[in-house]
Length: 89
Image (cartoon, rainbow, N blue to C red; front, top):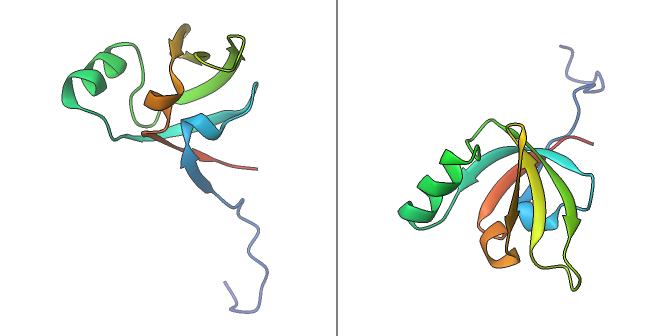
């Protein structure tokens, strides 16, 4: 690619799962949680490389439902702050 040519690749944004709005989707990157919690979430489909979509939240915003691997899982905001995702605008 010519060094002055515009880059047409989409820009990737890395943030926490807690930052997704309802209906937003992202790719799971990492779980920075205690091993027993991370293992349980991986058993539920939260595996790096998986696509996750934020669903509705309980009144007050916590917990929030996330769709992953064909299922729905409710997670507390404190947990989702430790899950890194990548979004593509």
